[in-house]
Image (cartoon, rainbow, N blue to C red; front, side):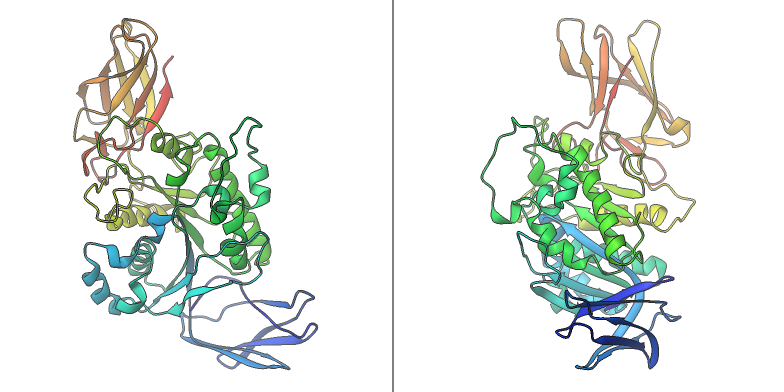
Length: 458
């Protein structure tokens, strides 16, 4: 297993003997003790030893001793969400190469929780799918591909142990992963339709069984891939997603006795395409926008210390596991790790975001709209001239129309908006906005795609 490195970390367990004292030692040295409380839980906060290990940890009480062998100190990341986070290593195109490469990453450790739901919060994990294990062909077979690739690339770059805790369930909605307190921040309107839902999608059912039991652990951060199952009802997502993140941060910090940061880094995947054709406007487009709290990029003032992998240019319509489940998890992991290095690890000197507009300027005749990216600081690459749309309040065709790209320069794009009376512009506002790696705007240096946008024009 991996325990979180840092100034202080938490280790906890349960005992049948209330009031008993549990002593913790690491490689023979006492590091702390705790009393079993009325809920049969004990928790010790201690200063981790120097180095990465391996260490042997003993928990000793009047009832006996529990021994944990081969414990490493590193960074612990939780991987959560629905089926694209659950998508197995066994389903990757290059699964054999990943199995063979696992021997080179024995400082990455894996843990998987079985699916579980509950009406009330569970203090312990009800069912373990994979106890702490080293990566191998056997243990990776049914492990999350994105979680593995993220942890593998992080470990390779940082040269530290990485602990990966997988807690996910395909086809689930954000309401199931949110606590009652988080849901109360974004109440549904009284006119909202009440629909029958599966037991795992009931409000807080997965939070109770698959998040709450983890709260006492000290962690570095969380990565998240979810949103597809909310695409049929998108109105509340821009509130519920930030509310869930804030709530998880507060609860992890409190339950771990503040050994987990109350502002821990939270990364997520902005949804990939799931159906061929550019005629599908609603659903995923709104969810992608809502994933950034309708700002377009992260981190932002509504979602501090978050990071994102844009995946709208990674369709896999030939996936044998359904187009909803693209196999290009390597590309997503690379983008997610790049963002994590900047946001979670504060590394400098590289672009971790795709280009994003900083200004929108109409010419005097109101026939051309110039969009400048990143105040002119990010050179852009144009791979196609399609993807921009304008909302027209004048002319013969009111509403949304394609906006033709007239020209582009190092950091600007010029659109033809003549005869439109344009009041909004949007970009990549489709379920599947482009072919593989062929959306319109990319960073010339990093190759990262521009995220979707929606912006008023005054």
